[in-house]
Image (cartoon, rainbow, N blue to C red; front, side):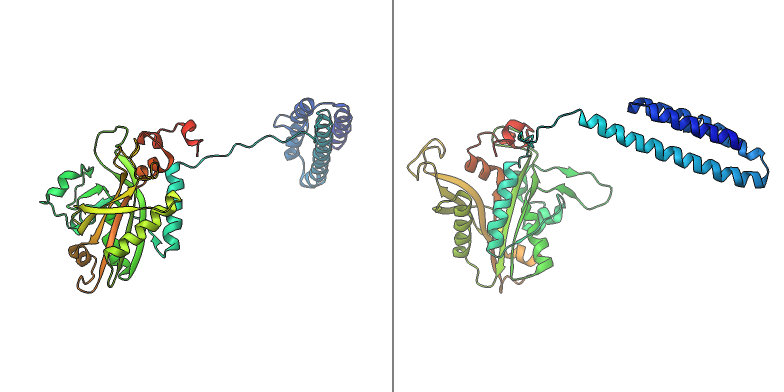
Length: 339
């Protein structure tokens, strides 16, 4: 067997040295060292030998096998280099341009808003999209019998236990959670996705984004609210914002305010963007209702605060002159590439 092993090695080295391409080398390697290869079959016969012969020939066989593998590897490396040299590379040519992805305009706008608010000392919080009926409604001064519930078509979740869960209809559901966790004073914003069961058209969707703002401290007034909103809108539209407030109704604030901004397209003179009224409706806001402060374990006789909610789609449509809300989640790469 020793003579046979040496003959296999000698013949293999001669054959390997004659091979000129990688495919032939791979085929010969399988023929020699594969499961049914010539050397592999011979090594299986070692089990029929005595212990002393197995030790002697086993070492020789392993050495031969290692030498053959090293030789094959060396030839393979040389063939790789040779094949690579045949392909000329002109290093003076410009490289291939790497395509970059694009952020959704809602993401861009959310990042801008977060930067503005953090610069004013607000925390950025996140909350659950699957919310309890308590935090989404009752803690916000909207009990089950309240007619305001009829204004929000809601996705309720069927459960076997007694707790009602809903897909949150507003980021306001984080107001009481934030007060319970952080107490007062408190400044925070909560961006996130909300859900409404309603028909989809150019200005309505069943899934959209809001950013909730909340500030609680002693002696907070409407003047503080107006000041913050002017700063935010001026930062987003990169121009000094002129705003006005008018009465509005939201169960979790008292008084409630609707906030309009003077149209940036016409400067308040009237155009198609503002329906020739000179003003654009921007958001709902107001002073936090005493019942909401109580639900957040805060004393309404000591603390006051304001809250507001901004729809990111509406803001983005105005900022980027987008005329259809459905484009934000259309998946149309032609739309995304513009931003």
